[in-house]
Image 1 (cartoon, rainbow, N blue to C red):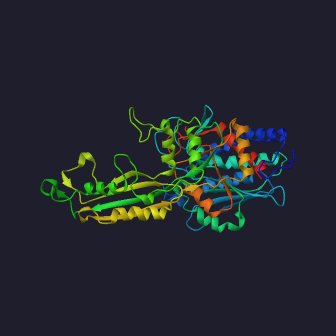
Image 2: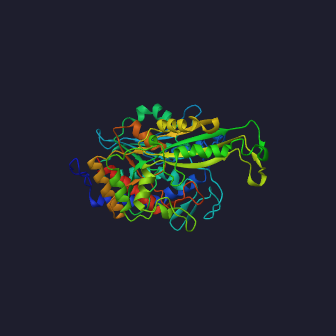
Image 3: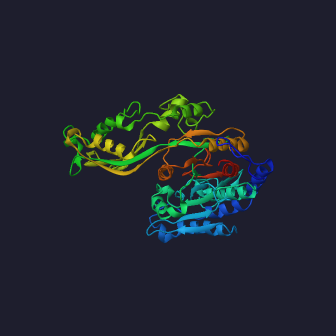
Length: 484
């Protein structure tokens, strides 16, 4: 069961018996205590701080982090060190370390999070978000797939690696409690724990979306985001539209004109050159692979009404546009009464919340500055226009994995899914991935996850595909013992 020699570009070879032992260990744990304790953790309403301002008094985030720490300590591994990091005014973070099998073992950081989206209504698969239910191979409940399962995937991968008899790296398990709030507390924790974390050779993020469960998909890029409020003010008080119409400019019309500066209203194409980038090397090839892989995602995954035509029909163009171009979402408006209570007046001021997705390699501060200038410079009718930037988060574009690690990922995918691994250029924003990539620039970054098309993260009926959870745990375990 010991490792055999391998070249720098081929995965370390371990015996079939060792691989079978690893798979059996993981499958048994997922069918047993992993599932049992994950259900218990689903019951904890550990809502992220952005949605739960009283989180400290509520105690739910502390409760779920402490539960995870107690569970890890109960595993009885004498080499495991478990710590809860607490900083004033910030959410807690769980960090656990385990030395490798040799003094010169590589260093791996495994990332997940324990905070959750709000429970919300509309649950039909189970009686509510905090009532776990196992049905047809899925565990339903808030946080099951996003991302509490990661605790058990991490530990399962480590336990199986140790059970194989093969060499394994030093591992650090990091589970934060502010990811659903843009990982607002993660940087300070990483600073405080720098000596413990050290310099990872590999960072494995277990909170990514997978377009299907047919192979091990690795996220190659994520878009950034700029969130801003744009306010147009015309009057000091509401004014009768019969008197003022045709004389006083409508703030809504001014707002429309401002939006025409940044977006073609007919096509949705972004007009600001500062919000575009050149594709980096390899990005086009990843888009080609995605469009040739048999995916009908993304269009088929959206609940569009009958006969609605998407902005782009060609699948490759959809993947390309979603991953590497900017897009504007008009997410909310203030200043308007409800339609049933609306009088025939010109409103004094209105505000629109914009959510602007930006390409992975674009500087979010530069994007925010360009948008602000476009809105505030020479506004129509000399309207008072103010811009409040709420958030500006960078995207992520992964560097190629080392040859040996890439080969190990391919082998793990082939063995556990029956197909080779593939890269996935995503359109969403996951701030912690770029944060970790920038913090550890020498590390390989592997971003994977069990969130599939039927996982419903952030929505009613969130569910973890239990087979997918076991598969990804087996794949990570194999990578730990063959990728270095």
